[in-house]
Length: 462
Image (cartoon, rainbow, N blue to C red; front, side, top):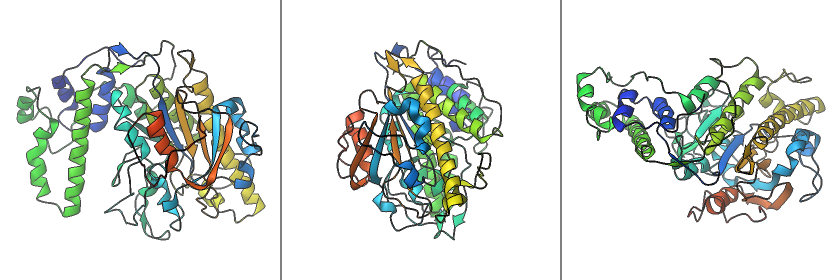
Protein backbone atom coordinates (compact mmCIF):
# COMPACT_ATOMS: atom_id res chain seq x y z
CA UNK A 1 0.00 0.00 0.00
CA UNK A 2 1.38 3.40 -0.96
CA UNK A 3 0.66 6.60 1.01
CA UNK A 4 -1.38 9.26 -0.75
CA UNK A 5 0.87 12.29 -0.95
CA UNK A 6 -0.89 14.32 -3.63
CA UNK A 7 -4.50 14.37 -2.50
CA UNK A 8 -5.57 17.58 -0.78
CA UNK A 9 -8.45 17.65 1.70
CA UNK A 10 -10.15 20.69 3.16
CA UNK A 11 -10.43 21.24 6.89
CA UNK A 12 -14.16 20.61 6.54
CA UNK A 13 -13.46 17.17 5.05
CA UNK A 14 -11.03 16.38 7.85
CA UNK A 15 -13.58 17.27 10.50
CA UNK A 16 -16.29 15.25 8.79
CA UNK A 17 -13.96 12.28 8.66
CA UNK A 18 -13.11 12.72 12.30
CA UNK A 19 -16.80 12.71 13.14
CA UNK A 20 -16.26 15.51 15.66
CA UNK A 21 -15.63 12.60 17.98
CA UNK A 22 -12.01 13.30 18.84
CA UNK A 23 -10.90 10.05 17.24
CA UNK A 24 -7.23 10.86 17.71
CA UNK A 25 -5.65 7.84 16.00
CA UNK A 26 -7.84 8.52 12.95
CA UNK A 27 -6.80 12.15 12.80
CA UNK A 28 -3.19 11.06 12.88
CA UNK A 29 -3.80 8.50 10.18
CA UNK A 30 -5.53 10.93 7.84
CA UNK A 31 -2.54 13.21 7.64
CA UNK A 32 -0.54 11.19 5.06
CA UNK A 33 -3.26 12.07 2.55
CA UNK A 34 -2.94 15.77 3.31
CA UNK A 35 0.71 16.36 2.61
CA UNK A 36 3.06 17.74 0.24
CA UNK A 37 3.43 18.48 -3.35
CA UNK A 38 7.09 19.49 -3.23
CA UNK A 39 9.98 17.11 -2.79
CA UNK A 40 12.93 17.84 -0.53
CA UNK A 41 16.25 18.21 -2.31
CA UNK A 42 18.02 15.77 0.00
CA UNK A 43 16.89 13.09 2.46
CA UNK A 44 16.01 14.29 5.96
CA UNK A 45 17.66 12.80 9.00
CA UNK A 46 15.63 10.24 10.94
CA UNK A 47 16.04 9.47 14.63
CA UNK A 48 15.08 6.15 16.21
CA UNK A 49 15.39 5.30 19.90
CA UNK A 50 15.31 1.57 20.72
CA UNK A 51 14.97 0.47 24.34
CA UNK A 52 15.94 -2.92 25.81
CA UNK A 53 15.00 -3.65 29.45
CA UNK A 54 17.09 -5.46 32.07
CA UNK A 55 20.62 -4.66 30.91
CA UNK A 56 23.38 -6.90 29.55
CA UNK A 57 26.00 -9.29 30.84
CA UNK A 58 28.77 -6.71 31.26
CA UNK A 59 31.80 -9.00 31.14
CA UNK A 60 30.64 -10.45 27.80
CA UNK A 61 29.38 -7.19 26.30
CA UNK A 62 32.37 -4.84 26.48
CA UNK A 63 34.67 -5.33 23.47
CA UNK A 64 38.45 -5.28 23.49
CA UNK A 65 40.27 -2.63 21.50
CA UNK A 66 39.78 1.10 21.11
CA UNK A 67 38.44 3.46 18.48
CA UNK A 68 38.32 1.72 15.08
CA UNK A 69 40.27 -1.30 16.36
CA UNK A 70 37.54 -2.64 18.63
CA UNK A 71 36.47 -6.25 18.31
CA UNK A 72 32.94 -7.58 18.54
CA UNK A 73 32.28 -9.84 21.50
CA UNK A 74 30.13 -12.98 21.03
CA UNK A 75 27.13 -11.01 22.34
CA UNK A 76 27.59 -8.50 19.53
CA UNK A 77 28.70 -10.97 16.85
CA UNK A 78 25.51 -10.60 14.79
CA UNK A 79 26.47 -6.95 14.15
CA UNK A 80 29.47 -7.98 12.04
CA UNK A 81 27.81 -6.92 8.77
CA UNK A 82 27.13 -3.44 10.13
CA UNK A 83 30.21 -3.05 12.33
CA UNK A 84 31.35 -0.10 10.21
CA UNK A 85 27.96 1.56 10.84
CA UNK A 86 27.88 1.41 14.66
CA UNK A 87 29.44 3.50 17.40
CA UNK A 88 29.76 2.06 20.89
CA UNK A 89 29.50 4.81 23.53
CA UNK A 90 30.78 4.13 27.03
CA UNK A 91 30.58 5.66 30.51
CA UNK A 92 27.25 7.43 29.97
CA UNK A 93 24.57 7.36 32.68
CA UNK A 94 21.47 9.01 34.16
CA UNK A 95 22.51 10.32 37.56
CA UNK A 96 18.94 11.10 38.63
CA UNK A 97 18.14 7.38 38.74
CA UNK A 98 20.83 6.52 41.29
CA UNK A 99 19.86 5.10 44.66
CA UNK A 100 16.25 4.56 43.67
CA UNK A 101 14.09 1.65 42.54
CA UNK A 102 15.90 -0.70 40.19
CA UNK A 103 13.49 -0.40 37.26
CA UNK A 104 10.40 1.82 37.35
CA UNK A 105 11.88 5.36 37.60
CA UNK A 106 14.75 4.49 35.25
CA UNK A 107 12.58 3.86 32.18
CA UNK A 108 10.96 7.32 31.79
CA UNK A 109 14.36 8.88 32.54
CA UNK A 110 15.95 6.99 29.64
CA UNK A 111 15.27 9.77 27.12
CA UNK A 112 14.81 12.68 29.53
CA UNK A 113 17.35 12.31 32.33
CA UNK A 114 14.76 13.65 34.78
CA UNK A 115 14.11 12.89 38.43
CA UNK A 116 11.04 10.64 38.51
CA UNK A 117 8.70 11.30 41.43
CA UNK A 118 7.50 8.32 43.47
CA UNK A 119 3.73 8.07 43.02
CA UNK A 120 0.91 5.58 42.72
CA UNK A 121 -0.15 7.29 39.50
CA UNK A 122 -2.32 10.29 40.35
CA UNK A 123 0.46 12.85 40.13
CA UNK A 124 3.08 11.42 37.79
CA UNK A 125 6.15 13.55 37.24
CA UNK A 126 9.14 12.34 35.24
CA UNK A 127 11.09 15.54 35.68
CA UNK A 128 11.23 16.34 31.98
CA UNK A 129 10.11 15.83 28.42
CA UNK A 130 11.80 13.04 26.45
CA UNK A 131 14.19 14.00 23.66
CA UNK A 132 12.11 12.28 21.00
CA UNK A 133 9.19 14.54 21.87
CA UNK A 134 11.39 17.62 21.66
CA UNK A 135 12.21 16.51 18.14
CA UNK A 136 8.55 15.73 17.46
CA UNK A 137 7.56 19.28 18.38
CA UNK A 138 10.21 20.78 16.09
CA UNK A 139 11.53 18.75 13.16
CA UNK A 140 8.54 16.40 13.43
CA UNK A 141 6.12 19.10 12.35
CA UNK A 142 7.11 18.61 8.73
CA UNK A 143 5.71 15.08 8.52
CA UNK A 144 2.25 13.51 8.91
CA UNK A 145 3.28 11.85 12.18
CA UNK A 146 5.55 14.04 14.31
CA UNK A 147 6.64 10.85 16.10
CA UNK A 148 5.83 7.15 16.02
CA UNK A 149 5.82 5.06 19.22
CA UNK A 150 5.93 1.27 19.00
CA UNK A 151 6.40 -1.66 21.37
CA UNK A 152 5.42 -5.25 22.10
CA UNK A 153 4.20 -5.19 25.74
CA UNK A 154 0.87 -3.76 26.83
CA UNK A 155 1.15 -0.80 29.20
CA UNK A 156 1.20 -1.90 32.83
CA UNK A 157 -1.26 -0.72 35.44
CA UNK A 158 -1.18 -0.73 39.22
CA UNK A 159 1.57 0.01 41.71
CA UNK A 160 4.73 -1.93 42.47
CA UNK A 161 4.57 -1.86 46.26
CA UNK A 162 7.48 -4.28 46.50
CA UNK A 163 9.53 -1.87 44.41
CA UNK A 164 8.85 1.17 46.56
CA UNK A 165 5.41 2.39 45.52
CA UNK A 166 6.07 3.49 41.94
CA UNK A 167 3.26 3.32 39.42
CA UNK A 168 3.92 0.68 36.77
CA UNK A 169 2.90 3.19 34.12
CA UNK A 170 6.40 4.61 34.47
CA UNK A 171 7.91 1.37 33.27
CA UNK A 172 5.68 1.19 30.20
CA UNK A 173 6.80 4.32 28.34
CA UNK A 174 10.05 5.93 27.23
CA UNK A 175 8.28 8.71 25.29
CA UNK A 176 6.82 11.53 27.42
CA UNK A 177 5.07 14.52 25.86
CA UNK A 178 5.59 16.43 29.13
CA UNK A 179 6.62 15.33 32.65
CA UNK A 180 3.07 14.17 33.38
CA UNK A 181 1.91 12.64 30.08
CA UNK A 182 3.28 9.48 28.45
CA UNK A 183 2.85 9.01 24.72
CA UNK A 184 0.96 5.73 24.16
CA UNK A 185 2.75 3.12 22.08
CA UNK A 186 1.13 0.82 19.54
CA UNK A 187 1.81 -2.89 20.02
CA UNK A 188 -0.44 -4.41 17.32
CA UNK A 189 1.34 -4.55 13.94
CA UNK A 190 -1.76 -4.10 11.79
CA UNK A 191 -2.88 -1.03 13.73
CA UNK A 192 0.62 0.43 13.53
CA UNK A 193 0.64 -0.13 9.76
CA UNK A 194 -2.83 1.33 9.39
CA UNK A 195 -1.81 4.41 11.30
CA UNK A 196 0.54 5.18 8.44
CA UNK A 197 -1.89 4.63 5.61
CA UNK A 198 -5.49 4.25 6.76
CA UNK A 199 -8.12 6.48 5.19
CA UNK A 200 -11.34 4.78 6.34
CA UNK A 201 -14.15 6.18 8.53
CA UNK A 202 -13.73 6.84 12.23
CA UNK A 203 -15.97 5.70 15.04
CA UNK A 204 -17.55 8.52 17.09
CA UNK A 205 -16.94 8.18 20.82
CA UNK A 206 -17.19 11.28 23.00
CA UNK A 207 -20.17 12.71 24.87
CA UNK A 208 -22.77 11.57 22.38
CA UNK A 209 -21.46 13.99 19.75
CA UNK A 210 -21.42 12.30 16.36
CA UNK A 211 -21.84 13.52 12.83
CA UNK A 212 -25.52 12.61 13.23
CA UNK A 213 -25.97 15.11 16.06
CA UNK A 214 -27.87 18.09 14.56
CA UNK A 215 -25.65 20.70 16.22
CA UNK A 216 -22.55 18.94 14.99
CA UNK A 217 -23.87 18.72 11.43
CA UNK A 218 -24.69 22.42 11.49
CA UNK A 219 -21.30 23.30 12.94
CA UNK A 220 -19.39 21.21 10.42
CA UNK A 221 -20.61 23.54 7.72
CA UNK A 222 -18.09 26.08 9.03
CA UNK A 223 -14.53 25.60 7.87
CA UNK A 224 -13.02 27.66 10.70
CA UNK A 225 -14.57 25.69 13.56
CA UNK A 226 -12.40 23.74 15.96
CA UNK A 227 -13.40 20.24 17.03
CA UNK A 228 -12.94 21.52 20.56
CA UNK A 229 -15.66 24.09 19.97
CA UNK A 230 -18.09 21.26 19.41
CA UNK A 231 -17.51 19.79 22.85
CA UNK A 232 -16.51 22.86 24.84
CA UNK A 233 -19.82 23.20 26.70
CA UNK A 234 -19.86 19.51 27.53
CA UNK A 235 -16.28 19.79 28.76
CA UNK A 236 -17.13 22.74 30.99
CA UNK A 237 -20.04 20.81 32.46
CA UNK A 238 -17.88 17.77 33.02
CA UNK A 239 -15.16 19.82 34.73
CA UNK A 240 -17.71 20.91 37.35
CA UNK A 241 -18.49 17.29 38.17
CA UNK A 242 -15.00 15.93 38.75
CA UNK A 243 -12.19 16.48 41.23
CA UNK A 244 -9.07 18.59 40.88
CA UNK A 245 -6.84 15.80 39.53
CA UNK A 246 -9.45 14.77 36.97
CA UNK A 247 -9.86 18.36 35.85
CA UNK A 248 -6.15 18.47 35.19
CA UNK A 249 -6.39 15.27 33.17
CA UNK A 250 -9.30 16.65 31.18
CA UNK A 251 -7.41 19.85 30.48
CA UNK A 252 -4.37 17.84 29.34
CA UNK A 253 -6.59 15.78 27.06
CA UNK A 254 -8.24 18.81 25.49
CA UNK A 255 -4.88 20.46 25.02
CA UNK A 256 -3.60 17.33 23.28
CA UNK A 257 -6.56 17.54 20.91
CA UNK A 258 -5.80 21.20 20.24
CA UNK A 259 -2.23 20.20 19.49
CA UNK A 260 -3.40 17.65 16.93
CA UNK A 261 -5.67 20.25 15.37
CA UNK A 262 -2.69 22.52 14.96
CA UNK A 263 -0.87 19.68 13.21
CA UNK A 264 -3.80 19.20 10.84
CA UNK A 265 -3.81 22.91 10.06
CA UNK A 266 -0.10 22.71 9.35
CA UNK A 267 -0.56 19.64 7.17
CA UNK A 268 -3.09 21.46 5.01
CA UNK A 269 -0.30 23.75 3.92
CA UNK A 270 2.13 22.37 1.33
CA UNK A 271 5.01 20.62 3.11
CA UNK A 272 8.23 19.59 1.46
CA UNK A 273 8.59 15.83 1.78
CA UNK A 274 11.20 13.31 0.83
CA UNK A 275 9.89 10.79 -1.70
CA UNK A 276 11.92 7.68 -2.48
CA UNK A 277 11.72 6.37 -6.02
CA UNK A 278 12.46 2.79 -5.01
CA UNK A 279 9.92 0.52 -3.34
CA UNK A 280 10.08 -1.04 0.10
CA UNK A 281 7.45 -3.75 0.24
CA UNK A 282 5.85 -4.32 3.62
CA UNK A 283 2.54 -6.14 3.45
CA UNK A 284 -0.27 -5.19 5.77
CA UNK A 285 0.04 -7.51 8.80
CA UNK A 286 -2.71 -9.84 9.89
CA UNK A 287 -4.98 -8.77 12.72
CA UNK A 288 -3.88 -9.29 16.31
CA UNK A 289 -0.51 -10.03 17.86
CA UNK A 290 1.68 -12.70 16.22
CA UNK A 291 2.18 -15.88 18.22
CA UNK A 292 5.94 -15.85 17.73
CA UNK A 293 7.72 -13.09 19.61
CA UNK A 294 10.43 -12.72 16.98
CA UNK A 295 7.79 -12.21 14.29
CA UNK A 296 6.09 -9.58 16.45
CA UNK A 297 9.32 -7.67 17.04
CA UNK A 298 10.43 -7.78 13.42
CA UNK A 299 7.06 -6.69 12.10
CA UNK A 300 7.16 -3.63 14.34
CA UNK A 301 10.72 -2.84 13.28
CA UNK A 302 9.76 -3.24 9.61
CA UNK A 303 6.87 -0.82 10.10
CA UNK A 304 9.17 1.72 11.71
CA UNK A 305 11.56 1.45 8.77
CA UNK A 306 8.62 1.86 6.41
CA UNK A 307 7.55 5.00 8.28
CA UNK A 308 11.05 6.44 7.80
CA UNK A 309 11.26 5.30 4.17
CA UNK A 310 7.99 7.00 3.24
CA UNK A 311 8.88 10.10 5.27
CA UNK A 312 5.68 9.62 7.26
CA UNK A 313 7.74 10.33 10.35
CA UNK A 314 11.34 11.18 11.16
CA UNK A 315 11.19 10.34 14.87
CA UNK A 316 10.44 6.90 16.27
CA UNK A 317 10.72 4.91 19.49
CA UNK A 318 10.53 1.16 20.02
CA UNK A 319 10.42 -0.73 23.31
CA UNK A 320 11.59 -4.35 23.20
CA UNK A 321 9.78 -4.71 26.52
CA UNK A 322 8.51 -2.86 29.57
CA UNK A 323 10.38 -2.62 32.84
CA UNK A 324 10.44 -6.00 34.58
CA UNK A 325 8.89 -7.59 31.52
CA UNK A 326 7.65 -11.04 32.37
CA UNK A 327 8.05 -12.32 28.83
CA UNK A 328 9.31 -15.88 28.77
CA UNK A 329 12.29 -16.43 26.45
CA UNK A 330 12.23 -20.21 26.55
CA UNK A 331 11.90 -20.18 22.77
CA UNK A 332 15.68 -19.55 22.74
CA UNK A 333 17.69 -22.76 22.88
CA UNK A 334 19.13 -23.20 26.35
CA UNK A 335 16.87 -20.61 28.02
CA UNK A 336 14.19 -21.43 30.55
CA UNK A 337 12.63 -18.36 32.10
CA UNK A 338 11.85 -14.67 31.76
CA UNK A 339 14.25 -11.87 30.92
CA UNK A 340 13.67 -10.09 34.22
CA UNK A 341 13.88 -13.27 36.27
CA UNK A 342 17.15 -14.36 34.68
CA UNK A 343 18.60 -10.85 34.95
CA UNK A 344 18.77 -11.55 38.69
CA UNK A 345 21.37 -14.19 38.05
CA UNK A 346 23.17 -13.89 41.42
CA UNK A 347 26.36 -14.58 39.45
CA UNK A 348 25.32 -18.21 39.05
CA UNK A 349 26.92 -19.45 35.85
CA UNK A 350 23.85 -21.24 34.50
CA UNK A 351 21.67 -18.16 34.91
CA UNK A 352 24.40 -15.90 33.57
CA UNK A 353 24.57 -17.96 30.39
CA UNK A 354 20.79 -17.72 29.90
CA UNK A 355 20.84 -14.00 30.67
CA UNK A 356 23.57 -13.56 28.07
CA UNK A 357 21.59 -15.51 25.45
CA UNK A 358 18.57 -13.26 25.89
CA UNK A 359 20.74 -10.17 25.53
CA UNK A 360 22.39 -11.67 22.45
CA UNK A 361 18.94 -12.27 20.95
CA UNK A 362 18.17 -8.56 21.31
CA UNK A 363 21.39 -7.60 19.54
CA UNK A 364 20.41 -10.02 16.78
CA UNK A 365 17.21 -7.99 16.29
CA UNK A 366 19.21 -4.78 16.25
CA UNK A 367 21.37 -6.28 13.51
CA UNK A 368 18.21 -7.24 11.61
CA UNK A 369 16.81 -3.70 11.47
CA UNK A 370 20.19 -2.08 10.77
CA UNK A 371 20.92 -4.43 7.87
CA UNK A 372 17.48 -3.68 6.46
CA UNK A 373 18.08 0.07 6.66
CA UNK A 374 21.51 -0.36 5.11
CA UNK A 375 20.01 -2.34 2.22
CA UNK A 376 17.70 0.51 1.18
CA UNK A 377 19.47 2.83 -1.30
CA UNK A 378 18.64 6.49 -0.94
CA UNK A 379 20.10 9.50 -2.75
CA UNK A 380 23.54 8.03 -3.33
CA UNK A 381 23.66 6.49 0.14
CA UNK A 382 21.36 4.37 2.24
CA UNK A 383 18.50 4.94 4.63
CA UNK A 384 20.91 4.10 7.45
CA UNK A 385 23.32 6.80 6.28
CA UNK A 386 20.54 9.35 6.71
CA UNK A 387 19.40 8.02 10.08
CA UNK A 388 20.67 7.85 13.62
CA UNK A 389 19.49 4.83 15.60
CA UNK A 390 20.16 4.75 19.32
CA UNK A 391 19.93 1.38 21.08
CA UNK A 392 20.33 1.06 24.82
CA UNK A 393 19.15 0.04 28.25
CA UNK A 394 18.62 1.84 31.54
CA UNK A 395 20.72 -0.79 33.32
CA UNK A 396 24.16 -2.16 32.73
CA UNK A 397 23.73 -5.27 34.86
CA UNK A 398 20.22 -6.38 35.78
CA UNK A 399 21.36 -8.25 38.87
CA UNK A 400 22.82 -5.20 40.60
CA UNK A 401 20.56 -2.64 38.89
CA UNK A 402 23.75 -0.81 37.97
CA UNK A 403 23.04 2.45 36.13
CA UNK A 404 26.67 3.39 35.46
CA UNK A 405 28.28 2.94 32.03
CA UNK A 406 25.03 2.10 30.28
CA UNK A 407 25.18 -0.09 27.16
CA UNK A 408 24.57 2.50 24.44
CA UNK A 409 25.05 1.94 20.70
CA UNK A 410 24.55 4.49 17.94
CA UNK A 411 24.03 3.26 14.40
CA UNK A 412 24.08 5.20 11.17
CA UNK A 413 25.66 8.50 10.24
CA UNK A 414 22.78 10.90 10.78
CA UNK A 415 23.59 12.74 7.53
CA UNK A 416 27.22 13.14 8.56
CA UNK A 417 26.58 13.86 12.23
CA UNK A 418 28.44 10.72 13.37
CA UNK A 419 31.58 8.97 12.13
CA UNK A 420 30.72 5.34 12.91
CA UNK A 421 32.77 2.16 13.16
CA UNK A 422 34.35 3.06 16.49
CA UNK A 423 34.38 2.47 20.23
CA UNK A 424 34.26 5.83 22.00
CA UNK A 425 35.00 6.10 25.72
CA UNK A 426 34.07 9.20 27.70
CA UNK A 427 34.97 10.21 31.23
CA UNK A 428 33.30 8.16 33.93
CA UNK A 429 29.70 9.18 34.67
CA UNK A 430 29.23 11.49 31.72
CA UNK A 431 25.53 12.44 31.49
CA UNK A 432 23.61 10.54 28.83
CA UNK A 433 21.75 13.82 28.31
CA UNK A 434 24.96 15.24 26.84
CA UNK A 435 24.29 12.96 23.88
CA UNK A 436 20.75 14.30 23.52
CA UNK A 437 21.94 17.90 23.79
CA UNK A 438 24.47 17.20 21.04
CA UNK A 439 21.72 15.75 18.83
CA UNK A 440 19.52 18.80 19.35
CA UNK A 441 22.28 21.33 18.80
CA UNK A 442 24.56 19.81 16.19
CA UNK A 443 22.38 17.31 14.36
CA UNK A 444 19.23 19.42 14.17
CA UNK A 445 20.51 22.96 14.73
CA UNK A 446 18.08 23.68 17.58
CA UNK A 447 18.75 26.44 20.07
CA UNK A 448 18.92 24.36 23.25
CA UNK A 449 21.46 25.43 25.85
CA UNK A 450 20.81 22.44 28.10
CA UNK A 451 18.75 19.26 28.16
CA UNK A 452 17.93 17.29 31.28
CA UNK A 453 21.01 17.12 33.47
CA UNK A 454 23.43 17.78 30.60
CA UNK A 455 26.73 19.47 31.30
CA UNK A 456 27.67 20.17 27.69
CA UNK A 457 27.81 18.65 24.22
CA UNK A 458 29.74 15.45 23.54
CA UNK A 459 32.90 15.52 21.48
CA UNK A 460 34.42 12.66 19.48
CA UNK A 461 31.25 11.80 17.60
CA UNK A 462 32.38 13.00 14.16
